[in-house]
View 1 (cartoon, rainbow, N blue to C red):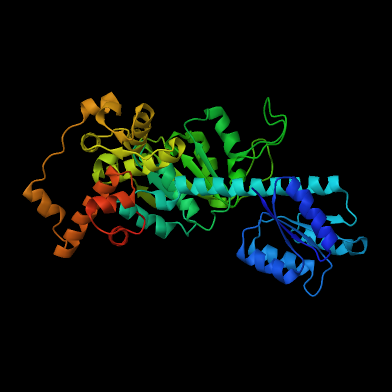
View 2 (view 1 turned 90 degrees about the vertical axis):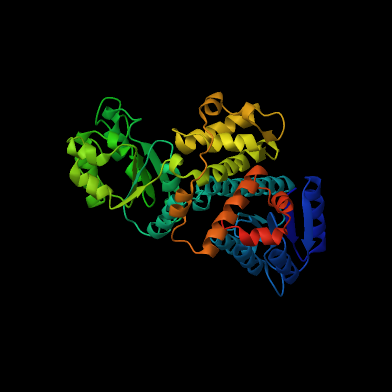
Length: 455
């Protein structure tokens, strides 16, 4: 239920407003002086503020300024006498939602209140969607228990604050776009657009227009000017997936756009400046494409200022169960259930080669959840192909163990083994730390202390 704060030093007006808004099904709190209103704004969550301007000693403008500082997204409706309209207009320029002159019409007041609360709802929804986007793609969700992925995360931390071009390479399904979005969301450009395009998915005849835009009449069907993806991403990041599929004829114009930081629309005579960071990705060996004269060498070196190679999932076995836990946590809110993995299911998932990499693993988890009746994921709800092709994990030999931990101190070795076991237990209870602590027979505080900061 939306919460409305009313502020007016006239008891009659305050009582009328209180009754009207209560009748709308709103939670209403009232104050007759500015100091009490400011205290509420600083200490409570308010969805809408309605305040008179002329009060003493603290007037409505001071309340409004406090509201803008303490709860910037809260809409403010000002009540004013005719003679103070100029003040109310100035307040609207400073971010107030609207103003009403006294005596106001009841219908006008209620319509304004409804519009303000709808605005508040939309802002909250926007923030929630932004949080979901960050949760889905943010740096903290790049699962990195294995050494190769921890190195990737360190690289992301180093390169995100820069504007350097990055070439992300790896097999299909390794998470190249997830890494690109993590770089964007960790950069100074995070408030600006992230525009992703799959170069292989756009017909060659349309790719130039999609990238650089076109002017009216440039070709049949160009009935109006249209900006391209470079301009759409202005100020932010342009992510070009499968860059190796870009036609050779277009690569020269693309290289010029990177170097000159400007684009010329198809059919246009003037170039337009753009401020874009480019991240590119490829699942093919671009150096071999260069040798075969299928990709420009100068463009390759311009893109690969910082190359970032993502390992296939088969080379990061330690990440399989944490990734499963990550995907299950994503599914849980949609089904209102808490999932856990059986020991047999864990063994099958860890014994499969994952040719489709992380994407295939995510789809396997969704498949299991779709066919699950209870809360425990067992082999019978996993995709049959994965179950049939899974091989038991080979027992580690002494030589392999020695080589793997050759440079670790005893303390570091024990910490590594302890963390592996903690991750297995957490995966078995779908990340529920209270259940994990109970199973491990340790306190919740001890479990938090032993886990890495991002777990």
